[in-house]
Structures are given as structure tokens and as C-alpha cells.
Image (cartoon, rainbow over all chains, first blue to last red):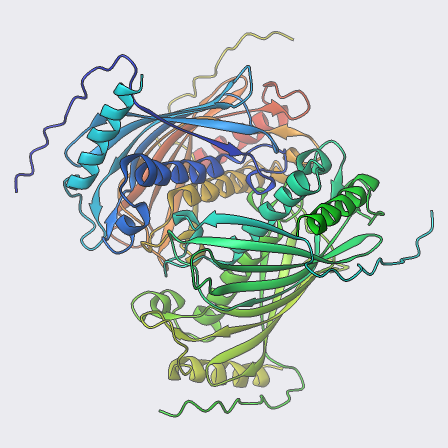
Length: 160
Length: 160
Length: 160
Length: 160
């Protein structure tokens, strides 16, 4: 199989598909300053990606990383932390797919307060790669993931 | 104020009040064996207690530990781990109040698989103490918590 | 192979073997009250058991749980939390082997402040079981672990 | 006090100061794939910054974030993850100061395997800001931190 990367530049959408979830900031997320300890934001982000796969793409994340031995490691990550989030607050995550490569997905995240004025807490842009957990090498995006993405984008367009 | 402890032996209930919650076992909960790493069970348990306070007792947990500076530290803990829980499973937590002291609550936890046959994963009995975060000393259980517990137990009795 | 359990009651030692380690309480260990969040104590305890295996018993923990697919899950646990530990403190862990079963080890832990007056922070007694990660079933304690324990106890007796 | 930012462009050094530390990859750092779960890398990075402050700059990190109520939040972060790190490996962190602003520090991190061939695992560039935990606003870098940095850079130059 060819190794050549021919990334799919996602066609512009008026309202690009977004996967949204809310989360309570818990005691266990917070540091001695009473704010979310930022590594915990990445634990939340991993949960968001899990739910995006299982709920939106209809590809079971636990089966993917378990029996199917397909990994989704973070390859690169760029974040800005704007305002702290505090214990007891609800925060909302917005996940968008920016670019679909042959072996990788580029996504963006915005996390803001759930309540008005919904201040931005942090934002990120990152790349995850599909890999074989056996070989540790990158693999083409599995078909069910590609189909799941296509369906999710279509459904999202229709619902706007 | 008297320091004497006069624990309330909770009157026997035919169906004692129980606070129940479900939780997906996530990738981030699991160890290299693909099972929940047990310290993570205690992070889940802390979240369950948070939700019991805020949802069932109607005492805002974040306000309690934040502005009100009242702590709820674990004083003692006894657990048995029976079966592992794996990534992607749903597990259910059942929290019961066993004994209400002047300055402490004794609770039990049962955690089982959500789906039949609902195998027991782990169980615990533990004591949490109400403390002043300023002094570090134990304090009497605040009135709103005591009222919240009484209301929760009554509502729970009526609903059976 | 017989399944019968004939636990080795460890012969009384005047000064029973103890594995000791120190640890700085870090920002990431602490909760919004500035104290160690107790689930983090169990992460520390797991690290202590790792070091006891690798350094004292000379059985490589990572090889055991990785290539050798032998698990060491916690089966039961009893703890008392006496005093909080705060960010920046050094705390000391003392691990003792209380009982060596055919398929399990019963251990005790004492954790105190490193500096005088070395106040007790928490103590625990717990049972870990040797298991096959493939089958999930308990297995006899592997010979190298049994030998490692015997050598560690002898060396420890000689050094007193 | 003036709010104007006049960043100190650090003078070029032939061998810029570097703070180095090693760390065992523990069971508790790893995910179901047996590799470091990347949020845990940021917990390690926070520990590295703690040790850089306390050991290299001689500014007690716990006192800074505790009694002195000065925060050091992450403001922005850019990382590349190159190779996984596995349970039982030793990894080495190299921290370098790239730029000293009036209210922020820009640092770089390289993390590689400790043993030859010391493959790069991940690298990062990030900005931390000095803040007042009371007001949540940025503050000028405290003098003892500025002095600590100057001394560390000088000592490091002399030792080359």
C-alpha cells in the first residue's frame, strides 16, 4: 500500500461540524489554587475524543484501543490558556475537525464557561495519528472511522 | 459548644436511602493491564460524594469546600476489590449512609457492572469528617448538611 | 498443581524487615485545600511497591507487569488517615511484609513526616495477589519473588 | 509601577544553562497501551519546574505557591510527541530558559530516553506567567526569582 500522504482538505462548510460536551469542574480536577490543574484539561480532552468517536462517529473507542489494537496518540499540540476554571463551574468543550490526512486528524478545541458570558478558558489545535499498537507505526485511517467522519459531517450540515 | 459525641444511630429503614450513579470506564482510568487503576476508583468515589452533596443533600459541594472553608477529609477506609473493571464498561455506584455522628459520616459503597450480571467490582466502608479548613480541626456537622440528610432519607422512604 | 493454600506465617523477627523511601509532596499531589488528595497517596504507594520489588527484592517490576504478564492487584485495603500532608513537605514511607501466602502478600504501610516530630500521616494494611494477566486468575507467587523476599529478610536481619 | 513590558532578551550563551533531571516511567504513568499517557508528561513537567525553582533558582516553590500566594500558570504550550516512553524506562528532562519577560518566562523542554541512543520522546516550548493568586492578575517577576535566574545562569556559564 502506498505510503503517500494525500490529505483531504475538508471542503469549507458554512457551519462546520462541532462536537460539544459539558463537564463539571470537580474537586479532583483542581490544584491548591482552587483552579483546574492544566494536565487535567488533557484528561478531559481525551474523554471528549472518546465520546466523539463513540457517540458522533459511532466507532467504539474502547474496542478500537482494546481488541482492535489501534492507537490514537497525540502527535502535536498547541494550546493557549486564557482564564482559569474553578471547582464547581460547568465548562463546555467544542471539538472541530480541521483537516483529515491519510493517517492523521487535525482538530481544534475551544473550552469556555457554560454560563454567560461564556468566557474562553483555553483553546487548542492538535494532531492525532492512527497507529498500530502492535508495530507502533502509523496506519491509514480505518474505513469505519473515515465513514463515521463523513456521516457526522453530513448529518451536522443537514441539521443546520 | 460541647465536644461530646452523641452519634445518631440511624433508625432502621426497610429500604435504606441509596444514592446511585453510573460512570463509563475511560481510557484515562486504566492501567497498562487495561483495568481501572484502583487509585482512580477513589477519584470516582470523591466525585460520587460531590454529587451526593450537591444533588441529593442540596448542599453545594464546591461552595462548602470553597467559600465556606469546610473540609470533608477521609478519616478511615476499608475496601475489597473483587473483579476488575475494563475500559469501555459502564459501572454503577451505590452509596449508603450507615451512621451519622456529630462530626462524621460513615458510608458504604458498592460498585458493580451496570449490565447484567452486575458483578460486584469493589465495595468499601469509610468515614468522612467535617472539618474547618482554617483550623484543621473537626467541627459539628453543619445544619444544612444535617437537614439535607434528613430530607434525603425521608424522600427516599416515601418513594419506596 | 495443588490449589491448597498453606500460608507461610513469617517467623517473628526482632526488627522485621522494612523498606523505606522518602517523597516530596508536590503541587500535583495536592487538592484545593493544599493537602495531599488521598487517592494520590495510593499512586505513591504503588510507586513504593514498584521500588520494593525492583530495588529490595531485585525482581524488575516493569518486566513482571509487562513481558511476564503477572499482575499484582490490590485485593483488600484498610487505611487510617491521621494528619494531612502539605505541599513542599517531605514524607517517609515504611513498608513491612506481615504475611506471605501462597498467592498473596499482606503488607503494612506507615507514612509519617520526614522531619521531627515525624507525625503519622496515614497507615494502611493491605493484601496484593499475584495473578496471570492472561487468565485474570491468581497464581502461586513466582519463585524469583519468593527468593527475593527471603534474601531481603535475611539481609535485613544481618544488618540489624 | 509601570506596566510596560521590556523583555530581557537573554544574551547568547555558548552553552545555555540547562536544568536536567531523570525520572523512572512508572506503572501509574502508563495507559492501557503500556505507554506514558501524555497528560502525565505535564504532571512530570510541573514537577521539573518545581525542582528548577527550589534546587536551581533557590526559590522555594511550595512557599511561593503557598504562603506567598504567587501563581505560575501555564499561558501557552506547544509540544511534539515523537516516540512513546514505556513503563520501567528512565527518561531525562532538559529544561532551558529561552526568554525572560517582565511577567513571564519562556522555556523549552526536551525529554529523551536516558540510555543510549537517547531517542527524543517529546519536546515543548511554553510560557509561564507570574501571577497574584489573590487578584488573578499577572505581576512582575519577583526579585528573588530574577536573582535566582541570574545566579543560575552565571554558575552554569562558569561550570562549562
